[in-house]
Length: 260
Image (cartoon, rainbow, N blue to C red; front, top):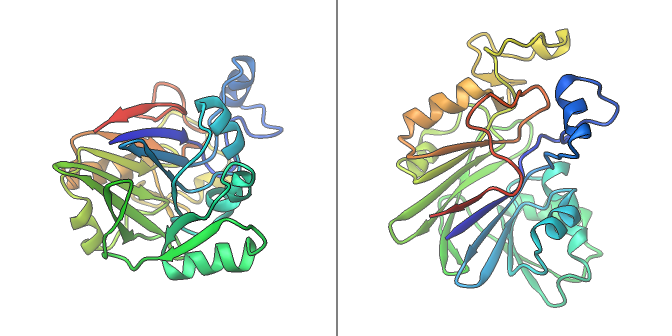
């Protein structure tokens, strides 16, 4: 199983439009981007796209991806589904799209009913399904106000766990499924302990214990604590905002590849 981090940024991406902070100015000078969230899982010559970033076209061109065989949608937030239309004229036949029933109804039936290719495959949480010869399992997480799902992927003894967008308040049953992964891909919006002077409206959204942001995302500290609790062999952080500095580990970077 091969994992590529297509997009590791938050819902606004990095650099932010119109932002003059140190990080955004440096990214502009260096022509760097932290695009919005998508992953690619490959196995036996087949590709599974995890979420459809608004930056999907750019990500496909950057990574030389000309098609996918399956799609998994984790929740109905813009930065995770808005790139679905980018698959038009890339996919010429029915494309299996997996997700919880309410997520598929919201995204495919209500928002993208005009697209000719999505073939919805509703799947229930904790009920495994197969795609590209791999076993996927959707797991409820905590990202109010929408229903949101992390997932695990198993390939023999190898195990990938992805929290997707969530606070630390992940249901116990979901955490048990994520436990002992070879790689944990975890949501982390900013660091609550970094030597950064956050704007007042940002500071106000950091929880008192420093583990959550806005009640629906983990901080760096919350994500690393979760990683320890789940006994993950390796952890990489995604959904990263422009408030991170380059020396804050262990951040994922667009284009990073992991072999499991």
